[in-house]
Length: 248
Ligand code: BTN
Image (tube, rainbow, N blue to C red; front, side):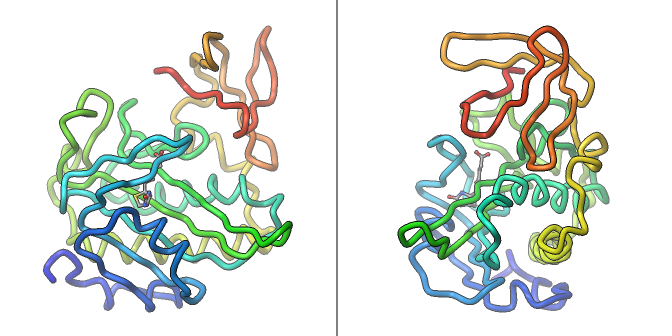
């Protein structure tokens, strides 16, 4: 399959060696939640018919033009889950730095010039109060973006026409995620300290909306757990659960 040429040779660690290459699936996240797979296993798809985004949104793709994959992660204490998504964003930005200036829009949208290049969706399964599964799904627009989101999205090929094969990019993402996850899980990555470098909006004024309420504030960084801190009159800590979002 041409799409994944170069993948196996470019892998560096343990993750991604158990791999499910799918031509079409409803959602690689759903697939991995339902499948019994090993730690570090990856499912990727050329096309998703019902790609899932954050906050119940849909993730759109043109078949074959985005890298879409899901990793089955090692378990972590539940209080590290929110920060995990932030560290995953760092891993993807590190890989993309070779090709474009991609940054994060809190908590983990990957943006270039205020347009969305990719997104990350973590999902979990609990048995009662016991965490049983953590999966991390990532979509990055590579060759083209769906026309219904063209005003707010961007493809990597718009920024750089000299890209490696998708299989190599995918392996690089998996390698980088494995490396950063280990640091994060071991307490060797301080996501708060790293945020100013990765954020597209650090110390910039952004507008937030929650229902009908809107306010502008200066982004002041994140907490150790990954929650956003705003500066100014409305200074507060915004958690992932509040439903706040940027409105750029
Ligand atoms: C977002 O930006 O809201 C998150 C988008 C996450 C999309 C990826 S594509 C691969 C994986 N499978 C899904 O159904 N969603 C994630």
